[in-house]
Length: 277
Ligand SMILES: N[C@@H](CCC(=O)N[C@@H](CSC=O)C(=O)NCC(=O)O)C(=O)O
Image 1 (cartoon, rainbow, N blue to C red):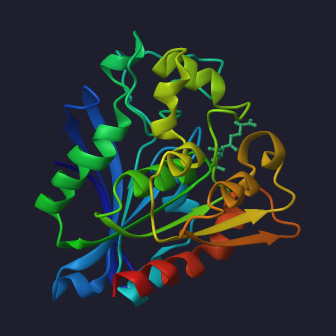
Image 2 (spheres, rainbow, N blue to C red; image 1 turned 90 degrees about the vertical axis):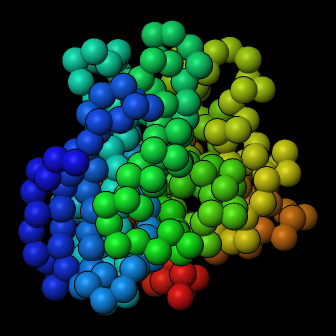
């Protein structure tokens, strides 16, 4: 593991690290906040998955999670959103495809499938690496994210309900198979057979029988992407008649930015801490 930076914050440590990823076929960077409680005992871990165009750094610099994570004793892991490096295919003029837009899936189509294995990276390779190098209690894991990362968090929780005890999202893409800003990426990563898309779509997963106890979703009402990309009401509809709980909070005057995310960050961390206690 390469240590790229380490800084003391709120009595804990904010670090940025890099390692070689087999799943992504190259070096991957991630950020980890370790609270002071980890000196005495292993702490629960909460995974934060970022949105389109992000690296590990956006939430680390603008998400304002450290004070509350320190208070609650949560380890926060913030991975990158796609493979990186000069050998990795990309679409330079399309921010919804390629680097920064891995959609937390395992691509099956060339040329993407060689590197774009983000589902395997986030659910298998990185957890094993974190468990080996940090003082984490892997029996207490939560997951949350923003936008494309909210989609990632919800689909991963639905696919791994035995691993995660808590899930929440800021402005998630709840039905990427039909959202105008993800259809193009799904076609290129997964091919045209839409049956293969369902395992990476929260609404479709629920309709196909996947279950998770409850979700917290915060959504800004003046978010530019609300109608074309996000549409949380579709998830509300999808869970009707199931035993899945949903706390959906719609906020007047909030947009899609990290000003919105940082405003409600404490609520999300408390949501996770209560379920990871
Ligand atoms: N470049 C785009 C806007 C991209 C954008 O808003 N990205 C969001 C996530 S969107 C969903 O996954 C984000 O988190 N950006 C990083 C940030 O620091 O705000 C455009 O020009 O419209």
